[in-house]
Structures are given as C-alpha cells and as structure tokens.
Length: 81
Image 1 (cartoon, one colour):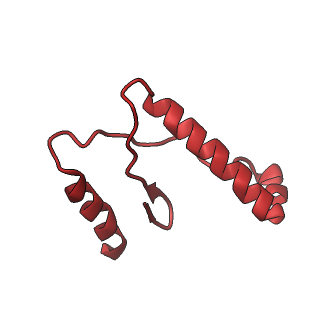
Image 2 (image 1 turned 135 degrees about the horizontal axis):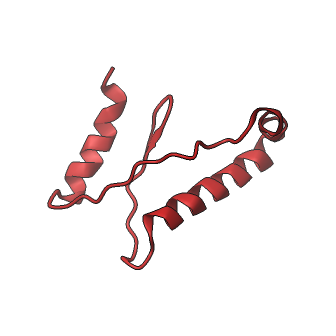
C-alpha cells in the first residue's frame, strides 16, 4: 500500500470468484467506518459535506508482471512529483 495526497495504491490478492467491485466496496465501507469511529469529527464534517470516498476507482490485474515488480512500482510512486 502507498498513500498519496489524493489516492491510494493497493496491491490485493483474492480468489478469482471475488469481483473487483466487491473488493473496493468492502474496503471503502470498512475504512470509512473505522475512520469515523476513531475520528468522530470526520463523521460530523462528512455528514455536512458529502461522502468520505469518491465513487470512482481504478482496478487492473498484474498480467505477466511479477508481484515484486508491482510492489516496487507502488513504492516508487511516492517519490514521483
């Protein structure tokens, strides 16, 4: 995982029977709940302003790339302008 100012890179492994849409929905739901529990002011702020996570997301498979290549790519994103 690499946290950027306006998005997050995640490398997730799952069974092929689980859809990417379900993974994203579950991750957004769980993280929002936990953030709101830990930081109650966030809940109050987003109740007035809208939602914590945007509707959009990008998902791709690694194809022929090795897991190590993808992990290195994600780690290097932080150093790019």
